[in-house]
Length: 124
Length: 291
Image (cartoon, rainbow over the protein chains, first blue to last red):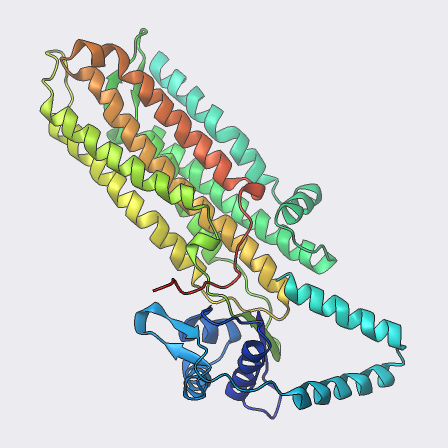
């Protein structure tokens, strides 16, 4: 359950967080009822302002993905889960395929790298 | 004189091995074993960072404990001798144990607070699992804190109510109140200090850096809780040894036995808690409790 923010990206950090959390909820990586870290903790870990993470959480609450329960924390909720978006996955796979070609790697190397990266994330 | 030599030998027996292990914590074989115990992937960069961290925290802890020992030896005002051991010149002071544990705790905190953060990168990663103490240290350690503090308070009350022996020279109110109050304070403070360490920022550029930092934080949190357990159980031992000063014949002859057991448990709990393989971080995300 890793969230990654690229500060050099033209996409604002709050959007990066929002999109990744949405994707993890939709795919079941973040099951309903999971408690997320406090805004202050996540902001400190990512080196961002509290307001940036707060905005991502607020938008996710508005979208029905998260629910804030005061001092108990922020939880993944099942109120209005957005539908899975296979288009987004295909877009990212296409970008990865382009990178594989540019690096001159063959299919087996590319698939092996993906499996390895997924295994490392699952083990975290 | 004989008592001082005995006491110094006792402290050195307790402190020497941990100090040696702490000072050699950065050795490659020790680092590899530490990483394996925490299930960390071994990369040259990771090993280097781990070795530096273990070496630094080990030195801080050893220095803290040794400073505590030095203070205990050099400041006679710290001595409150509440137990007359059944052998010539065998009095044992207890605030010395506290001083060593307190010095160790200060060393643990110093080591954690001086941890160097990895250089900032444009890509930053963080885990979406909150860092909670129950994921970083065994719950049984916190139960030990509660039980030890409760037993210390109970023993303090009993000591206050029981008649004192004629030859007892120790201040009754001091022995009945100070160790239990100290035990309760340590039982409250240790988990809170550990939480402060856990909630500090965790800057990382890769998932492996997060896992490594989690393992190091767990070691720090467990060391803080272990120091708390030691101080609570030493407080209990003080009360139990003080029972030998009461006018109850049975307690005068037997109360030192559970006192020794409490001291043994304190040392054993500390040894177990600071072992690298004692606990592996559990950070799978906490579920809400069913309503």
